[in-house]
Figure 1 (cartoon, rainbow over the protein chains, first blue to last red):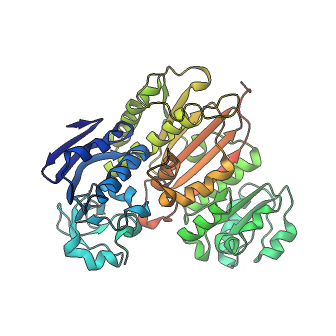
Figure 2: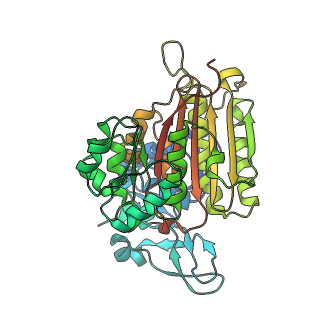
Figure 3: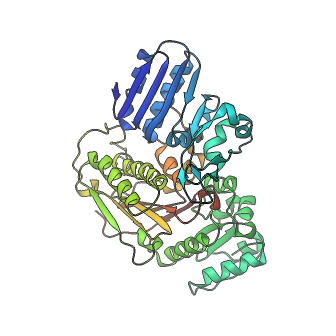
Length: 156
Length: 304
């Protein structure tokens, strides 16, 4: 299904979003009718752009879904994660995994690896990002930004 | 200028002294206040300023907060507190950014020369400009800009930030800036997919340039209606006030969150210019966590 510039696929209680969440995402709320009542999982790894209007629609969607059951966000896109961390309302939303900007101090490679929250939860709650192997040289990569930009939602 | 550390005083004195204006240095606010009059550009350690944020109520040509201890990056809570208190100039970053930013800011104030990204970019850097011919050109302009930025060798991360910044600044210029005779922002609720030829006061331009230190993006509208007095507090509040039930309001805070310096210039009723600077030399963590903020009022060309 196409919502503005966003592709949405519904597989049972699982929603997969890819593309842009922008001014054309006004019909994002229509997805409620395509999802079963109760708990849902949303995968946003394919989201490439979010602006302030798109964020407002995303907030509305997540808020409405949370009124019907638990919402778990999987593979949250980097662009969405940094913006959600600006907004306290998202604290408490279950995040299973997310992409973050990493930099390799050895070779300078920049990448957005996937962080699994169950694996790194204790560190994330302490606002510490784990080191991850660089896909190019194998050295330990560091989070390439301030932890607050990605981890405020996990703060203990 | 007031700064408690002698070494920082020396650095700042050299910096501001480059304007060839007389510089007086003190180490506390009472001594500073005794010196300040409406001709003074007062430069204050941000930590000191935060102990008395209403300091800026005393008439001066400008009040500028600069990083505190060792001229390390200003702490984000202090930047936010000063923006909330209405400070028009808060420098967040350490040297050498501090030097470049402070000198440009002081000279803009001294000369009353408010507008143009040229003041932040080294001579020799080419400036690319786009003029939107229709409100629906926004997405194409943003896409072209992000593509051009990556094409000059900047990382995808910067391209992604540029997309968000340009999109929000253009949306602000296209839909929030226009006012009717009663001051009502009559385009705020206009559908964003509607065609609207942009002529006369509706013209919106975007320019960008990079000198491998900064990537600068400048967006101008011809309305000059941005309320510069309240915008610092809005930026400081950021997403804390985001509410799914309200219309807009998050655009400028989002652009601020994506950049390292956020510079507003307004000629009331004539022009609003927003310049954002991304530092492309350093890792984000080597800079201040909050972006610097500057708001200038000036005159531009002829009134419409």
